[in-house]
Length: 148
Image (cartoon, rainbow, N blue to C red; front, side):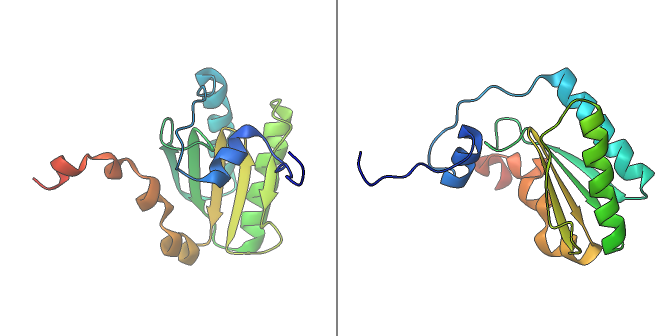
């Protein structure tokens, strides 16, 4: 097809960009490896004095990841350090492709670790965006049951 360009990125990223219009058939991540990386992430955040660490299971609900970790830091430098430490510790554990956005001093740092996405917020930004409300399990109640 002349004149068409291909979007860069993996099929998973392309599906996430395309939105929820199409069902995405993909295999969930290997549980033992996922749990290993989750332990590294949550321990690293706790070691750096991160607060309110929440792990959300996105398996079957999102095309971009199987788990989401949300945590709060009190200052830009703390959040930036948490992101750097997570990246280093995951690299030491064998996960080499970790992407960080917003680590240059912002209210929200996003870390893409493949099957795990980590959001590090300042308290005000976390309350504003409300990712736990958006992706939390309490929203999984079917509409018929919610009306009762």
